[in-house]
Image (cartoon, rainbow, N blue to C red; front, side, top):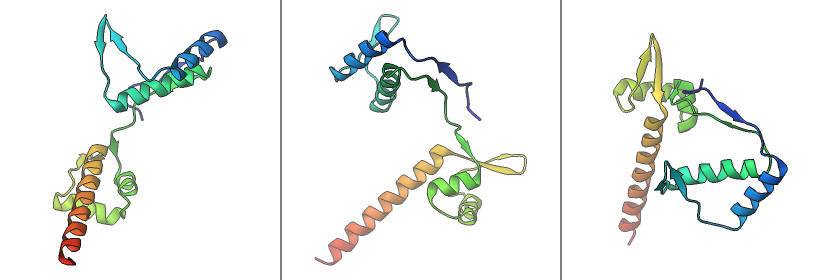
Length: 135
C-alpha cells in the first residue's frame, strides 16, 4: 500500500525522448527550478530525478509512487537480516520502537535502518578495539 496513489506518465514522443537523452548524456549538471527559484537537490533526490528523466528519455512509461513506510514484523526482520522472533523480542525490550495496529505490530522502516547503522558502528568499534589489542 503506497502512501500516495501512484502517478503514471506515458513515455515521451521519440523526438523529445532523444533530445532529453542527449541532454542527460552531455551534462553532469542538472538544475531544478521551482517557481523561478533554483534548488540544489540532495544526492538521493538528484539521482531519483536523473533516473526518472533517463527513463523518460528512453521513451519508457514511468510510474512514480512512495514506498510504504510502516513494515510488518516479518518485513522488518527480513530487511534487518534477523529472525522474526529476535525482532519481536527486541521490540518487547524497547530496542526498536513499534506501533500497534490493533494487535499487529508495525515498525517504521527508518527505525530498522537506524538499528542497522548502529550495528555497523558497533562492529567497526569492536574491530578497531580488537586491532588495538593485537598491536
